[in-house]
Length: 339
Image 1 (tube, rainbow, N blue to C red):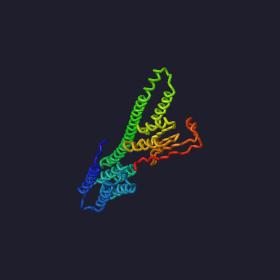
Image 2 (cartoon, one colour):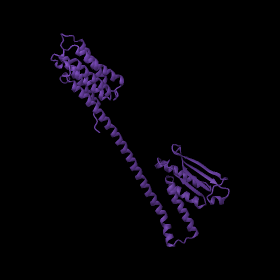
Image 3 (cartoon, rainbow, N blue to C red):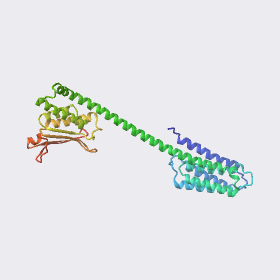
Image 4 (cartoon, one colour):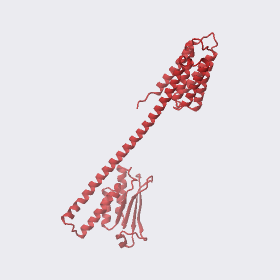
């Protein structure tokens, strides 16, 4: 998007506004009563100076817009009282262009309704004072065209700005979506590769033995199935140390459940490795029959919660059933930030 310096635009507008006053001074007939004309110039300069203040907001305050409207009504009245519409006025009608410039500034600063009111007053005053024929010769039509162009240009720029913001927002959303899809694809590929590496030897053994497996091989298949399930449900709760301790716990008869609900996705590097090492150590030192490791809720200071339960009836635990008499052997909350 092409951007222009606001200071440069304000400087050009100031010089253009000052040019009208210089024309008025050049056309000023000092033997006549110059006080109303000088007062009109002063009022116009004050209104222009405030309207072009560099630190003012883009949308003109309503009070300033109404002040400009009042100035655009007073200036023609002050100057016209010192002129004869039947004479060759020349640059004496400087106020028409000056009022048009001030109304253009008002319209550009997003006060189009006030600018149209000022343009309407200028047209009505000129018609009542000098007739319809003077609208073209005095430049009133040009001032109205300036206001109309400013209003249309302001609307077009505002619409272009809204469209640009929408396009930028859509581009950011598309980039995030693409990044998420690429991350999901990469994660799926990693999981599939790891699963294939784990399951392929056992699958070949099953094919080679025509599906006839010994009891220890069937048990190994159950361990393998549980490990594959961990890769799907555990996701970022797994590293080599956690996999080793989970398999050791299952081989001694414990039921291990890993649940990653996505609340530690922002952890990475040493921080995530520290959390997983603590999880592996906790699983390795407990003798619980049932171990559940689960990521904490979003916004929590805890990264992972680990619970170990001991069942007084080993047969119940072996069947994977809950018992109301389970005792807590392990309760650990692993923080997100290393102490």
